[in-house]
Length: 522
Image (cartoon, rainbow, N blue to C red; front, side):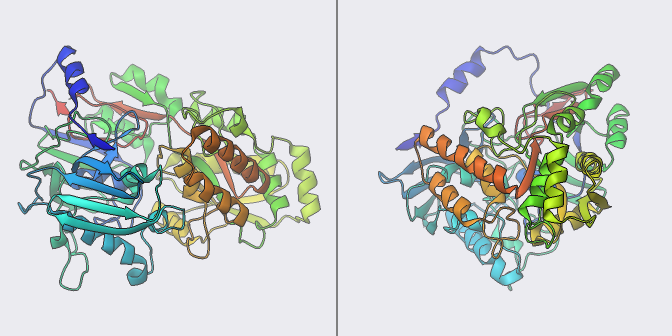
């Protein structure tokens, strides 16, 4: 099968559309972010970091707005008849910010660097388990047959391979080897990338300023999502740290920033009266309360089920999303073609049953700590609601407010009891379940470590037939509802505020802002 992206249909659509304004080059676009980037090499990451890095570095492939996978650095790809060899052709003329040509061998270098990260630093690459066979998909080799040809050799065909490559958290970017010193260590402050913007200035905990890379040569495919033409029009993009949501609203109304992401839905009605544009899209980011099932208290499934029965998901979701969505205690977003009422299977809200299970488990008022932060106000608000609902059945839940970085470090190390959390957007239910499943002994971020569940998940990842895969996902959801290793809550809608001076900006389900293809007017 050979996928060539000539974009004929997209070109016809564009030609037939009425363009109200042509893009204008110049100006500074300021995007409000709740926290600073954590690293420039992706060794420490979160959603804010991933957004910045996607402007500095071009991925091999990426998700389009419709969640199909499109080209970025790779202009085309083909697979062998048995699906075990994938060959990517890099776009001609692509260069790094220092002017050097991008070579397929650089991608091999980065892959090897990622795979060696855990042994070298003690903190594995977040996607190592995705590609090393732990989750069924196993990449045996990555090689460059010439400067523009990159080849992935798989142990067996995998229907999700391309989507895994496109996953924004995996950082399969074009990154210059010149970013590291002779010892292989990342040079502090270095960001020699391949994307439409390059590093200009970084004032820690204030803002990061990127400037347009005039040597950028885009792929010949329409801009869509994170894929296609990523040509920048603005001179600079500033990622401005504004931790407080109220301060972010004030900042956009006063013109200090141009785009505010992650607006709380209950603010929509009021903010629309302020002369700014409110954009929204269905969400793909799972909001959840994580449970450390190896904790001496939380390892008792009766206690975990008692917690689940104490939570009124309908009320919590209504409060937090202003009725824009409904509860979803599963790994399947409501907008997914896989979704059906079977994925609503979960311990129902029943305080009496919760109290009975607490008594059966011998619970005697021991403290349960819920970690939260105020960088992401939704996480803190969820913790407050959870605390109140648990208190109503006699559970002594206490909130511990941490810096977001500290809470995230605890997530990566598995050092928490309960954590009010949110996962970055994912496009496929199999990938979403895979975010929180696995072997805790090798993957501390795994929330659900059960042999039978892991075996079923492995079977799902290798199943190409839609109906069979969906039936298996239903069985997986039933197992999760029995064991309650995590408390999925809902998928918040993506809601952003945009200044009327900003043109060409769109919101999409994956939620991350994009500064390319955007321009400003006075």
